[in-house]
Length: 131
Image (tube, rainbow, N blue to C red; front, side, top):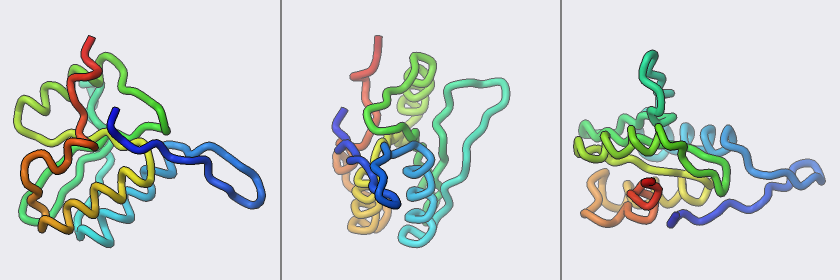
């Protein structure tokens, strides 16, 4: 995977591992405050394996984001669904660190929500996880 791994977080003198919920909260806040969009929880009853969040961005941009703890990988069903979304033309990101979220927001701001092809490659889910 191309994403920079998160480091341990120090909270009140204790070292604890970064959790998925921390990355998810950071994503919601960054998308709202910096990209002026929404990061909605994506739940699809009856269809498993969908990404955690659907990002609704200005100018009608839609991006799917799967959040994992640092070092986490998608399950087989998730890989299948990600491949379907990718073939339909959607961007599917795999974010496993605060840095990955920051990189995504920085790229989107720099390119006014329309980055050139290839700029999100280090964050994009790819067929590396295919079985």
